[in-house]
Every structure is written in structure tokens, then in C-alpha cells.
Length: 95
Ligand code: SF4
Ligand code: SF4
Image 1 (cartoon, rainbow, N blue to C red):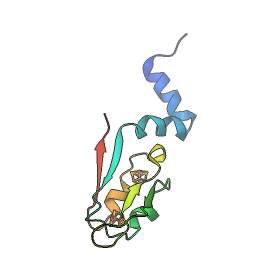
Image 2 (image 1 turned 135 degrees about the vertical axis):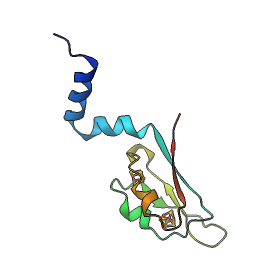
Image 3 (image 1 turned 180 degrees about the vertical axis):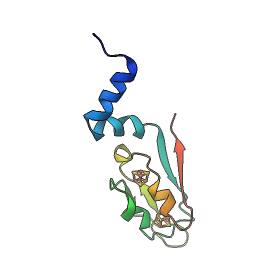
Image 4 (image 1 turned 180 degrees about the horizontal axis):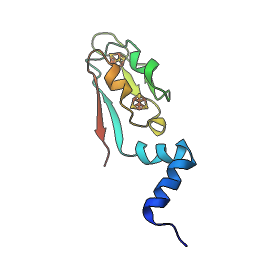
């Protein structure tokens, strides 16, 4: 007997994280306001998937801004945005 959509969804959830990540990651992207960022690295340190890094270039204040270096690894958990003391990170829905 074929599984219905709900059961299939539950089965996917129980198969492991990659299935969950692949469904979540396509829904959001991370935008860092480079001029607000002071390169403190808190978002880099808190990211559980090592998706954030500091850029090689500097902003007008001489800080290396953070950016989403590994978008395929981002789950949209928002820990980086919650951690940022300057509210420089926005999580936006992807189309
Ligand atoms: S949303 Fe989560 S996974 Fe994505 S960059 Fe921020 S802390 Fe990392
Ligand atoms: S936590 Fe905020 S200010 Fe610090 S590096 Fe990340 S985006 Fe920049």
C-alpha cells in the first residue's frame, strides 16, 4: 500500500538531517549589512554549520564584514542574526 503524503513526509524526517536541510536551505538567504558589520566574528562562531565567514575586503570603517560563504550549508536557523550585537544580519525568504 503506497504511503500518503503525510506519511512520506514523516519518513523523510526520520531519514536524517540532509533531507531536512535540503528542504529548509532553499527557503532563506542571509543578508549582512556590510556597513553596519564590525567584523566581530560572533556570527561566524555561533553558526552550527560553518556557513558564515569574514570577507577579504573591508567596509568604509575598515572592518572585514561577514557574509554567507556556504549558502548550501545554511539551514536558516537564524542563530547568526540573533547573535549579532549590531543587528546587521537579516534572514529573508528566497523565491
Ligand atoms: S542561519 Fe544558521 S546555518 Fe545559516 S548562516 Fe546563520 S547560523 Fe549559520
Ligand atoms: S555578529 Fe554582526 S557585527 Fe559581528 S561579524 Fe557578524 S554580522 Fe558582523
